[in-house]
Image (cartoon, rainbow, N blue to C red; front, side):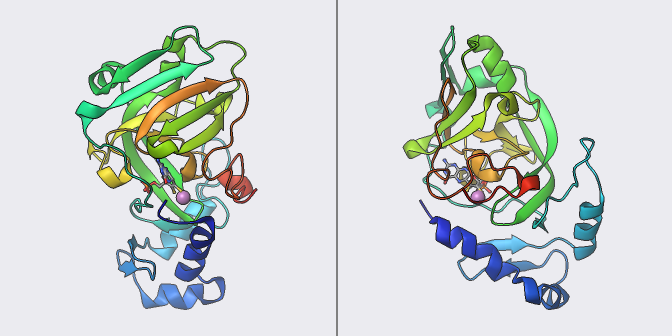
Length: 244
Ligand SMILES: Nc1nc2c(c(=O)[nH]1)N[C@H]1C(S)=C(S)[C@@H](COP(=O)(O)O)O[C@H]1N2
Ligand SMILES: [Mo]
């Protein structure tokens, strides 16, 4: 893993120390690329965009920008143990508490109904990207094909090197939850989970497992990689469910 919970928690404080935030934003302008101390480039959005996003409501009534979040213009690669990025090597196991388990290769994934969507993503390290574009297959469609049993209550996303993330079934079946393989009009970059990742826009981004290898429907909850390392089991950005 490229960062421990302690380093993750420290990163946003370094970028946006709350007392110095105004000074910080005066010193840079929108589009400025800021190199963080820990490495990695941040592209800052305009602070007026940020205030506007705080004041704007989503169709579900929640603010566009969840509490404590700041805008970035682009996804920031957050690291992780990269799996095989080649579409040829891709296998997605859809299994668990289902009557019809199956495995999809990349062509199989592309043969499922494709959804193109615009959505916002929120990282627990306090950055948000508004209006990101992804293409992929709804977890709801994968579930329907697998004939999920009534006893299933969770989805466990399984990824390379044993990374997992747990999501309550009813939330994983939301239309915005995808197995995504394209981002901003191009195949997913390796750092962002190529060839396919989970996308759960309305929970903190750690739930969106990159280098996805499986979607497991489960009777019992199974806290995953970050959930067993001090992070919240549910991860709702509007409730600031950051730490467990
Ligand atoms: N397999 C895997 N998926 C992962 C991670 C990881 O370490 N391994 N990190 C998570 C975290 S903490 C975040 S914030 C997002 C970051 O996605 P990005 O690198 O595309 O911005 O991926 C999530 N998915
Ligand atoms: Mo994260």
